[in-house]
Image (cartoon, rainbow, N blue to C red; front, top):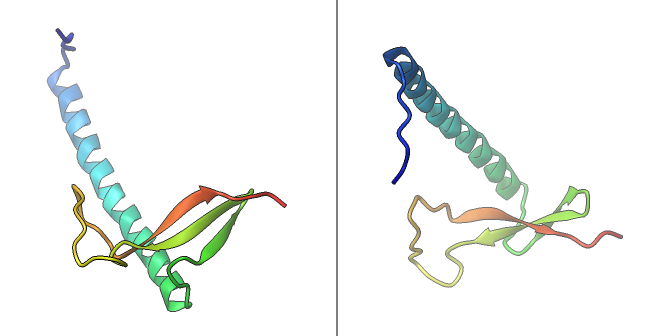
Amino acid sequence: MSKTTKLTKAALRRKAQAYFLLRQRGKEFYGDADEALDALLEAGVKPGQESDLGGGRQATLIDNFQDRNTVFRPCGVRRFELKPSAGEES
């Protein structure tokens, strides 16, 4: 059985306000990430192409629809995304 924490009305209001603020910030960050990804695509980055992230890390452009017309995930799916990976340090 979980323990319930009692909050005052003011504390509940602050928590609810924080919730909506954080959700809005998340939307803004996703928008910024989409713009950065679009800039990479416009610059000619192709699926399978790696980009150096520094510190021995790489990111590969992935085409989520490369081999299919439908992708099932519990959220919206962009066609392209960057997949980070640990690169080999030289």
